[in-house]
Image 1 (spheres, rainbow, N blue to C red):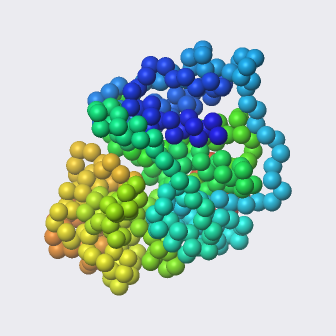
Image 2: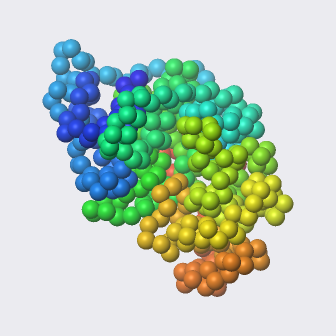
Image 3: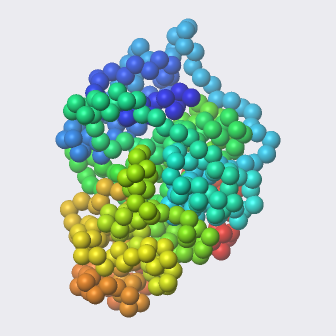
Length: 396
């Protein structure tokens, strides 16, 4: 419960950026983890507000540390549940949908968990035959009032908040594993600022995943285990595998506007005009035929002239990678070139293939494409789940 409290606390901390954080019960060996979350984890927030990223936000203050008689240090529980069971985090998009399908294929007893009320989460879980549990988040109205009056505001590492909730639910309900759908490209930073990498997807990165696993090992125990099942894979391979999950195709959307707090502001499925919509259309289209693509998107997102700036930013032709959960420029170039080779690139984008990096032109494309389809080592994934992933991919 304390992990949930401190993880969601980032939303309130950023409003005032106090020099000291009062959180009684923090023990000395976890100060680094919480300082990391409130420091690097808020990197985009600090950058967008022109603020320095603090090395130590303040968890190490003597008032917090639990080496006192009235606040004993927590110790991890040693006993584990008798039977394996997996909790799949469902976000309503293609990545968590693929995780759900892999888990279904494994035959392991499983259920799904979502934060929020978007119907796409329920549809994606149902498509994989998983019972969906929901957690509702209510933000203190005082925070909205502070933001309206000019308090500091901006992006928070929400995936870290969801991770903490999922571990609490898993521990209470006897799930041995919490599996998420974060891929290797989540490690790719948006920019370098003040000598630090700033990454919109920091709480989906392997750096955060390793830190959380270490924290759990010291303060929770051997279960539940939190890991990304897709960490070995890049977006090209994920898109190819998802293209072979027809049950998920009518049941997902990756447009972030579908997950706004206000249901009235959500599009029917795709807004078709944000960087995320452009990216998902780009990464999936080479693996779908025209009928499949139209059934999913209902529009030609890549052909819209207004989306050209998004596309150029995704390809690395702009100064900053889009502030969204999108793939790397390499993955985007390969997808665009694949469409070009298939003769399916919109005419308005016909000039772009000539601007591709030299290493991807000519024979370099095939080698790079094949490399993107390979699975990397994944030390954060257990050997059992890595073997199940390889079996699903046909590489075991």
